[in-house]
Length: 169
Image 1: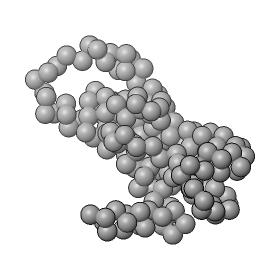
Image 2 (image 1 turned 135 degrees about the vertical axis):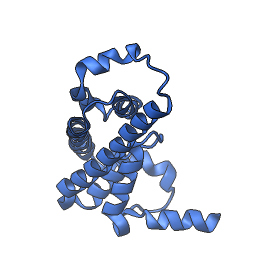
Image 3 (image 1 turned 90 degrees about the horizontal axis):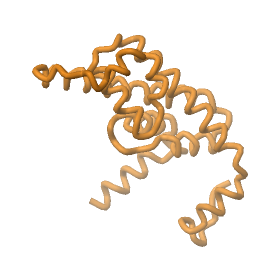
């Protein structure tokens, strides 16, 4: 088991597998799994500042595809529970429609929103468009804000984890 964990850590090493790791983590974090992709995006951009826009694009693509998985799961769940016709609790989402999915980036709210959109059979491509807009905006804003934090502060914050080891600059 230890060898497997070491192999996974090696495989997801940002300097070596950067954009593929960003894509996978972004994809998985958009599903109903409790995982955040911002540290991977921020870490890769910190190591490769010249790849800001491609990293944001890859993260947005992975996160949007994960949102599509949530949508499809919701649609499939509706099929599985076809006898349950009571959607009155989600009327607000039907009234607001796909533009509400611009909030699909929100923690603990975004993934269920995508699933509900599928459940309610909101228009697929319009949902995907609004998901992508929200997720793109989140990556641009969050990563830009994180990059403004001084490097020394991150080193101070990570000191308990790094111990005496000298961090890479």
